[in-house]
Image: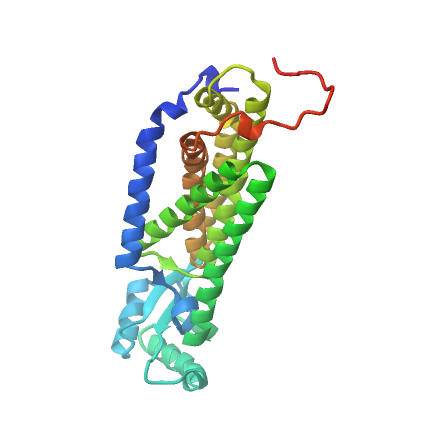
Amino acid sequence: MAVFGRQFDFMSKGRFFGIASIIAVVISIGSLAINSLQLGLDFTAGSLVEVGYSQPVAIGDVSAALREAGYEEAQVVAFGSDQDVLIRLPVDDTLSDTEMASQLVNLGDDILAALRSTSDSAITLHRLEFVGPRVGEELAESGGMGLLVALGIVMMYVAVRFQSKFAVAAVVALMHDVIITLGIFSLFKLQFDLTVLAALLAIIGYSINDTIVVFDRIRENFRIMRKGTPYELINLSLNQTLSRTIITAMTTLLVVFAMLFAGGESIKGFAIALALGVVIGTYSSVYTASNLLLKMNVSKEDLMAPVKEGAPDSMP
């Protein structure tokens, strides 16, 4: 069923959106190659200090106090409320992992002393963590492997459930979603950490679910409709699933926006990545995946269900 009783000719804009997707992917890959990602401490190593103030505090004041104490490279962000502050410090290349870990407690005491010297508010140390370079490298490798394994499993599932052309279209659409999301993080220099990696895996799950719904309707229409070209049948299938696609995207975004605006700094990257992924994944399910099927000349013969001998012809 169409939205508001209207039938949309999605495939007539397929060439335009296909070119737009290629341009977006090329820009994203270029940005990743030139700017790379703004990796968080989970991957790059360093120290993480979380402190709490008894009164609201300005981030600029905290940064100024740390600069005066010699911590010029410290990154200061609000964490959950205007009384909680998260301080990120890069790793000292002159020290080994063992030396950095042993000095962590002293680092916390030094930062507290520096902050207390410039503030009348009571300051409490909430968290003190250190991630070594080797751990960061292992996390990056494991995260990348996880993404590749997820894409491989999706491709095998779709090939078995549908057909090889559908598997190629689904995986290309998923790669499109992930690359553009990473490209946006690279272009705007947003921090990439483990929560964002988790969001990318969630995006793969969300996008493939949306794509499978569209593919299922396409297969059904190809099998039961005697008349109609692939162009017309794919258009019909997209219109029939459009209401469900829009409702699913909107309800998901409501939850994601709640996390983005009320969830605090710790899950901000996760929420941003998920919001981008929902929008891009919805777009790719309608245009990228379906457009690829059309370009690969999917036909009724590709999806013909095996007919038992003596079974009546049920096609209208």
